[in-house]
Length: 571
Image (cartoon, rainbow, N blue to C red; front, side, top):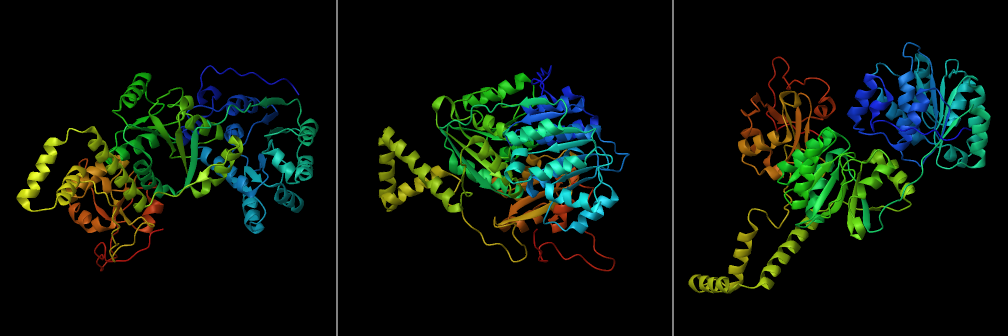
């Protein structure tokens, strides 16, 4: 093996690799702002045709490190298997195949097939016969297809052994060697492994010609003073879960840092929080240094209480007020997670970090725990009772602080005077004053039954509405909230998740306000465009954003059932 190659990029950017425009577009849309260390060192080597041994922990971004070079060199005019990625598990095969689909979305008809045991082999046979460019599979099922003659290596150019030490641990190493023996002698091989036991080194010596060793050292891990927890949520539940967390986990004077994966996502989430009354600002890679410094300055001074940031934008700054970091979108790799949560708990101060995990991201959670060698504790979303208890506790604290501060003589006289004049008890007068001080924000979180004519969205008591206007008309979350609140007369802070697509918008409304919103918005306009509104259907969730949708039209000779009268079930 040669010495580890030193790569000093001129710019900390994916532009360094000179990838094709379709690949760069996909990278930008995914939200990658800067390559991880494994990507910086590996992508140029694989693009240059070198064999690579990569020693890096799981969750360091190595999937993109080998997927992008493979896609860059793929010959789409040749309808044959050109790349094989061997993985130890079904779950990883699916995950890697999905990553290939994501990165190749603008390249054209790239055919990627995951093959693994437990899936009907006939389904795999049909796709292999129709032609596949990239196969991602477990050793046993790949061997099965090779023996059947249904998988051909005649045009194979690249093999990736992903998590080689896991394949060793699971007893697949002999299978891997048998597969490599069937491959052409002129082959580019990349081997990735968190550890390098003797058996893995033997495979490298036997099958990799003149490989470059790339080793990514594991950096200092998490700060002990950070309390780490995670919450399982769906994408649709994230916004409600976040707002409940902000109310139950923070107090006045504390700052919150929320991480989103993409620049667009950071901007939209900040707008949604602003629409709910939070002093939130976005910070991402498209902002210049002066703009970023302005956000940090306002955060330090208390003018901003929440910053929604991408990974690159939050690098290298320290704000003492940050006591909570929320990973609204899971990070792309474990190292990013460490950088993220390190924004709190600085210099020995206590801090909290909460990770939102969708059901499909639970493997990433396990990767992070392995990487950090720490167990992350699960929590549930705060209930209405939790939030009400929190409100009451904070309200009591405010009252007691005011009592302890003294200078209440004038108010004591006033209360006594009101009691004498009205005949009410002193406790009643005090309760009325407390209610007046609390304002419009109730100490209770009231559960309201869902009307018969609609089905609630999950267990949230929310109903999803469809609006026929979207991003193409310049619509933003603040526009949706403003229009609904103004036209319908409902509080803006009760409006739930807002998903804006190119030509339509889906918005969650408390069930008790549905009729009020449908009536109030019947002839409304948003940013100068008609905003036809109706109850959403299950099909709206599937088709929004793909093409310009049409409002439901009745079949000839029939009338539409008025919104709200037809029962439907949300998916």
